[in-house]
Image (tube, rainbow, N blue to C red; front, side):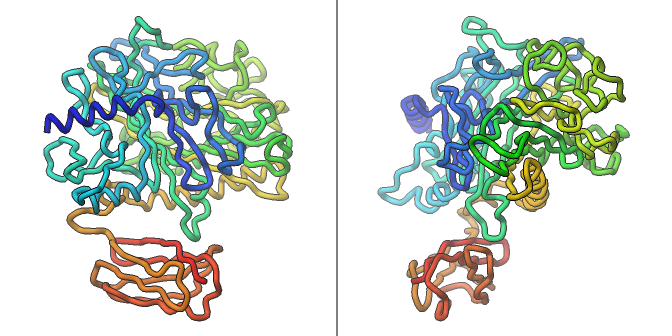
Length: 546
């Protein structure tokens, strides 16, 4: 075992260089993750959130996490950054004894469901070569270097808490393709000083997406983000807030607006005039929706998730606030110092005044109004449903837009963790002008949220289990003409459906396990999907008929 660990470590050191930024692109979006925690921004400060992919068009420049909280003595701790050139507060790798990044972690891991399933089926077959990112998956930390014993999630088949890919164990990923990075706010003062006092928090971020699924077009342009924040230090934190900060660029960066949708726990950006220099007429909108967050305090008399019910059992946090920015101006500009970052997380401006619902810019100097937590909430804030408050009604000009949605207040005791899930949503509608994209992302948001909540995200449900194969089948010939043979390894009822690329059901039937034939006579030449479904499984396979 020691030799295996040494081999994996050496391999990871040798292959980490030039792997700090990797891109997922199995659907209509190409989106990358940096080893230092920057979303969609590589080391050359080039954005990779291309949609549609391979077009050079983009709706997001980059995204970062901000976090802040107090210790029990009232001291403030903050980890946040506007952008890397303006100063950084995170480095690649886990919390350790030195505060320096081990080269083994100065990388991003990229895997697909197909790779993992192939590893499960073939790991002990002669001639099989384990993919590098499965072999080097950071399942265990080096405790001699002060790292946590357990890091990235994996299927521990023998229960010994050691990641052993050569024995058939495998990484736990989500979706059909994923990228994964570990980064933290522990900075060595000899090489740089962060924004605020280190919380000693360690972020594990997985961006993932799904290939096309018939009838679920809303997934084709959606990126999911699953992030776990581990408190690795010795300090207990209270009044903790975390924000997903996004620098939106809807095509050209200088003509955008932002808004918030309180009841959907979403914030978004859209083009300000209906014509973009890159996307053209009817440009898209881009949204970020909070899907899941930690449970809120019980019996706090607050509707934390904005669903109209106060203190329901198991209530989770929704967005606490949405703040938007266009520049660094004195009052309503982006934060620069630790206190200002924390105030931003709690819906306060740089001068400590609270965001107000005044129909203008949300600062008390431009007009009195009741305090609120969501800037430009349109008509979605139950506490302030009227008047309608967007940037057009406020008389704002369309310029560059950045902002965040924060979650809190939360507690983060030493040794605990917080988990968050987001969806990055894209929408575009023809003939609806600048607001068509917003209309579409709200529709997409609802469909994505319902679908996402129905999924099972345990490791064994996402890959084929060694003990009970989820489904092993063969489909031949493909392309086919008069008939196609399907061999299924499971006994029992299997429903099959032949689906056109536009989602129409052309044929359907039922067969038992083993070898079965599907009659394709009368089916026109072209590309189709064959869906197989039974107790506990569902698979969709491309099928070509000629």
